[in-house]
Image (cartoon, rainbow, N blue to C red; front, side, top):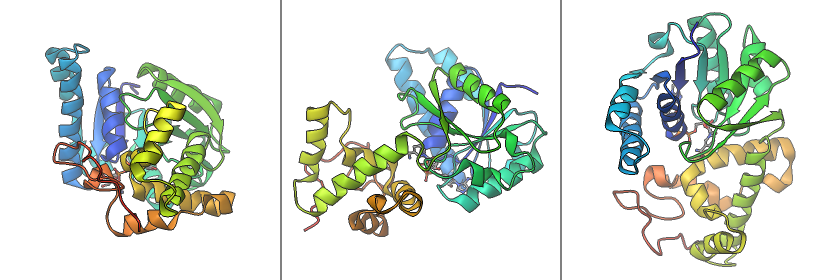
Length: 297
Ligand SMILES: NC(=O)c1ccc[n+]([C@@H]2O[C@H](COP(=O)([O-])OP(=O)(O)OC[C@H]3O[C@@H](n4cnc5c(N)ncnc54)[C@H](O)[C@@H]3O)[C@@H](O)[C@H]2O)c1
């Protein structure tokens, strides 16, 4: 078994970033997505992150060519089967989809393969409950954009073994990330706080307390946050943010009730940067259009 071959399942925002991180640190990655367009888009985005690195003098054309040659794509996990040590699941935030991946991964790969989930909030114990060996299932929670954010939250489910925790921490370290260990709790440490902050900003916007631009500016300037909470929601995706809030509302109570404006944005298909419109609008190159913040009234 090689710790150098990783299978990443889900070629969306996070799967793209996680694949880049493993390629950049010398791993072989098979990226799996049932949507062939997502695979093409991911390959383009990974190439762009590497090209920006070349422009900034952080890497060389030769290293990038070597990294991209270590990446393959597949539309099904069976197409990715082989000698792998880690299946890194980062599909849509939905319990039954994630459990289906666990079942399929156990069927495709050798006993002993670690199955890690990048869920933002769901229960690792529940995701692992469908596994034959739940000792090998763990949370590895990355942050967006993965190439800039240094943390990986390592989340232990009820049955996760110490060996699996140690292996997950070793992978995080091998790709240059700092890891912290969290006992399972809805939203772990990070999503619980971030969801609350983003939801409150949406309530403030709905109540007409200030414009979207001014709410974001206030958190950037007063508290030195690198992004405002509405800009961050656009980056995360309001569909993902809503799924997380609904789960936290269900498990932790009323303070996490999703703001109706988030539900409205998702119904309108304004999921954020990935659909070109969220709270703000974005041009073809992904740049934010000035003064485009939603006016809810
Ligand atoms: N967006 C963020 O900022 C962020 C941060 C940390 C963690 N997460 C978590 O990461 C996970 C993915 O989020 P994302 O923002 O990348 O979502 P996304 O919507 O950008 O991508 C999800 C991808 O999963 C694919 N997919 C769905 N079902 C599949 C299946 N059965 N097999 C293979 N591929 C499948 C979809 O085609 C899509 O390409 C979620 O659990 C989310 O909560 C997201």
